[in-house]
Image (cartoon, rainbow, N blue to C red; front, side, top):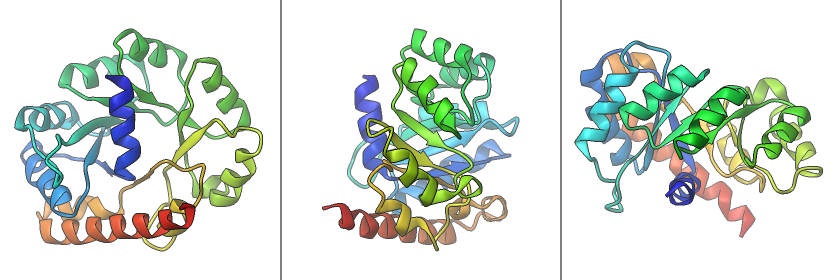
Length: 222
C-alpha cells in the first residue's frame, strides 16, 4: 500500500501545499484543484483547522479527472504527536520540514509513508540510513535551488527530491526538467487570500498552469 501511495505521489508531479483556516473551505478548494488537473493535496498543520479539514476531505471521497481517489497528505509534521493526529485524520502520506527520528519511527510503525525534509548531505545520509530515498528538499531556493540539487545528484543518485520553498511559475519548468526531482511542492496556486475569498476559478487556473509547466519540463527527460 505504501508503495502504491508513493507511486501516486510521484505521478502527481505538482503538490499544492495548503494552509487552511476554515474547514468548510476544504472540499470546494479540493474540487478547484481537481478541476485544474491536480491529483493530490497537502494540508499543513499550521492551523487549528488542519485535522478536521483532512478528515472532511477523506470522508468526501473526491475523485480526480482520471477517476482515481484524490491523494490526501499532511504537511508541517514536526513531531510524532502531529504525525498521530494526521494519520488519525486519514492522511495517506506525511511531509515534514526536517528530519525527526521519532516522527519517522512512528510513521514506519503505522505503515504510513513520510517524506522528510533535508537541507544537506548529512541529512540525506541520515535519511538513507533509515531506508528513505524520497525526500523533501527544503527550503529549496534559499539553499541554492537547482544548482544545489544538481550538485547533490552526484553522490546520491539513488535519491529523488520534492523541492519546496520558493517554487513558482517562473522556475517550475526548470525544476521539472531536473532528473533528481520526482515532484514539486508549492503554495502560489493556493494563496490564503484566494481560499478565504473563495476564488476557486483563479485557483483552478493557476493549478492548470502549474501542471502544464510541469509536464512541459518533464519532456526534457524523455
